[in-house]
Image (cartoon, rainbow, N blue to C red; front, side, top):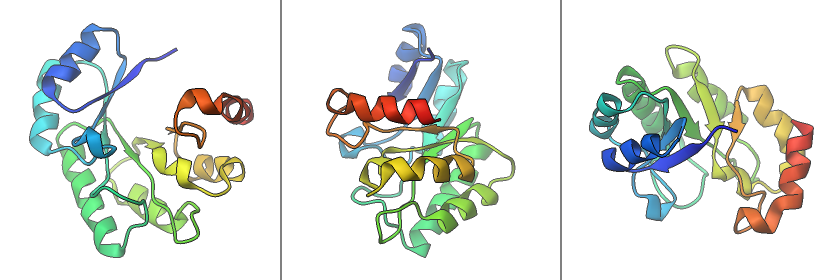
Length: 168
């Protein structure tokens, strides 16, 4: 099993690696569910850790329905983070029907200069039909899904998570 730890500072990144983490998810403002970190924070962390750093791409708190200006902002942020050492990205875009916004996800992934590993984040928990969406997320090129299984926490959704894992 690979341990990935969500961090929001250079100190927490260093401690996570020392504690056995094999990958970091870098965010800012964790108390709001995590937002896009600064380039400066990524640069500082990359000076001190050897494990991969995946950056959250989320321009604001709240829902996961983004307009074209917000998508453009997140694409720009990701390009800058990529130039400065990001090893992958964690994001998720939904449409007004609470389904994966396929076009925005494709646009985002194609806008990067190379293929990065991407994780579909907790937006997945707000999809109305999670079970039928697993294949869509996989087909888009996401290598992982960050989810509680739709419940308030993992322990309340263990059966759903086991079902997802058996189908991937």
